[in-house]
Image 1 (tube, helix red, strand yellow):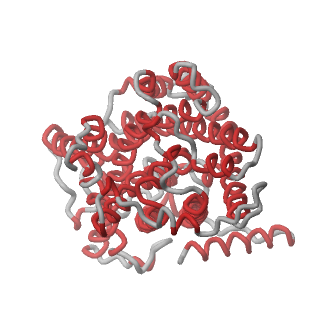
Image 2 (image 1 turned 180 degrees about the vertical axis):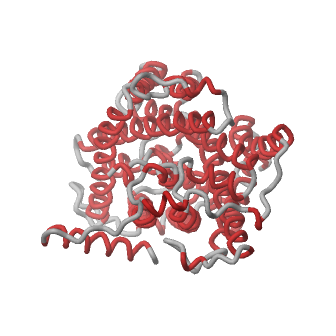
Length: 502
């Protein structure tokens, strides 16, 4: 449940508001579909490597082995940065404003910060229990919203208004971004969706971090990668389709920078005339924001702990409590969540957008790093004469899938802040939040190469043998079902796995 729901957050529930406003219903849907292809390629790319070498540290340690220790340094710190950004806390303040916008946002930010920090300081057990509950709520919520959305669209709401594809005709399937007419305006409206869509999908690669701790990793990890992706794809593509059907792209409540913005789902339910349910749904979305914030802090703290363990960060971060909680890493990562207090002087929607931009670019650069690592992994196998068909998991889409990951992610990052260059639209905050991490990556990489004196690993020198004996010893065939119920469950799981191969 955590693997399915853990990565569903405010990107889908809140961030899609701006995407619908900029891209229109078709632009929103196409943006998520294109981003879905990128995520799929990154996941099968990652799956091939981690199924073969499920080592602690995941793709960060694989980058050290197959690319360059300096590349691993940059990838590791970038990965930490993508998780420590506190956009979800700012989104929490935005969601609470639905009920009461007369209280200063600092109260809501502080409350959410305390909730998230408390969950993480109580240790892994408390985090796991809380996250299971939160993830369950999120999965039930998004499933219920998609079903409810279809019912409302077909006229099943209290107002019995059969919407159908009305909003695809008026105001139209696409939006002419910033008043720019023709295909150009529609294209850049669609392009504006991509960065936000990336923010929604960020986190699917977290399965690699768990590779070193998973049971029977060579059997379970490929299945986990396929299943998690398919379920998330259904939630996100299904969710964006429903949003585009129920809410017109010119609805003023979609504008997150306005300070009065709402989730598209809440807007749709209110418009349908359903009483009380909007508040219930908004409460569920609030738990989603808390869940995502808690997951962000948990992953960020473990990432910086791992960096310290590998010598890429201060050993001070290795300090733990008697129960093994890396409290220094937790507190250090949590301190950056205080950036959410920017919502005090600026409306929470604008702050959410700024922090989401930074998280999106950092996440895209992580996918870029994973794809580059695979290309070196692929080259090393060719040079050393290793048949990929002997690997626990492989696909015939390589190396093209990895190249798509490299080219698409770097292109989206490069043009992520293009809107600030339109005449009269310069915005320093948007420029910085879109390009800060993009510029920081090469600085970290070349700086680490100079400081540590490293160089890229030659294909003939790549290590494909270390840890293999221990990994093979931990692998075993899954036991046969004990009864008909277990047999049915395994059949259901196998169907899901097959769907993941398409």
